[in-house]
Image (cartoon, rainbow, N blue to C red):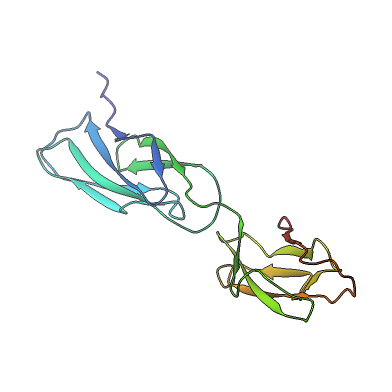
Length: 196
């Protein structure tokens, strides 16, 4: 006579979890007497998903629920598939895959601090640059004036690391006296794509 396998089944209330969101998971046991409580170990990639290390199915019950929370890491890393596993001695493990979507966007924010006007008499303004999400490694952002005969920038690039990505870097934009009677001339400060 064969003995049925004792198995665990893992189920989630959704297959997709937004970053910084939460859902509920359920583990059920099958093929075993329900007389005793059962301690389960839960595993997942903890850099993406927070799950309890242990949950207990109480004596007399076949099911336990638990909460899962997405880890908001400030890194733009797209949707990540995470496997949640429920394990207990003498049981075949139960697994479920969850897609955790990312709320971080990799971009550069440029904010004028002292207005947007410069003058040929040397008046300047300041622009703060900061990344909107943490980079995986050092990134360099090129900066240039669209017309150096009208205005210059104090730095040709700024670099951000994993430790200073959210600290604004100041760029001074200074007007240039071009000796031409040309009235007010519009020019841009161009912020390039990140280079890593």
